[in-house]
Image (cartoon, rainbow, N blue to C red; front, side, top):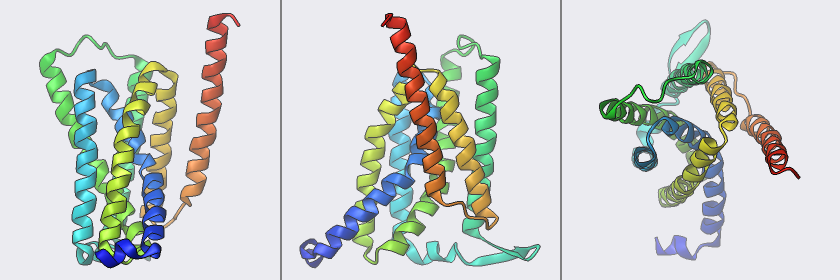
Length: 241
């Protein structure tokens, strides 16, 4: 361990992997920020904490079971000549879940749900449902994130440190993003469209058609920039400038 702290290559590997983990965590941040939006503010903050803690726990446990995780990438069966591993199955199921969840949320936004229907018991059920959904997506993103970490770094200590730093950044970023989505309702529809985009990419990856993440992140960044301009224009009109 002391040797790693004195090795400049280890610090370079830590910095590079941390950046990669933060970038890969964008998907998770978007999902958590959207899904906790239906909870009361005090429960939303608790759900974010639970979600980020579970994400960190899943990643560290996966790193401590490298042999098991590497086994997930081995084919377990073939379908129409296409081999499928447990990793492919997890990504496929997770992608379908995101497509389903994004579609349901968009439908709810379009129809307009009555926020006053649910009482305190309804909120408790909603919190449990939200946490369970976060667990499912954390599992999906954990597999993809840790497979990337294994391919980049040889030392488990560096992997755990990078993942932990990335989780802290995710936690700090998820609150402001969720608040921003709450303050500007039009951005929620944009975030939901991101969920559909991410879900489609996971499904494609699961069936053997890898879409480079750079394309997806560029599309998200471009759409976000356009929405930011729209928000600035609306604010200027309201202020009469």
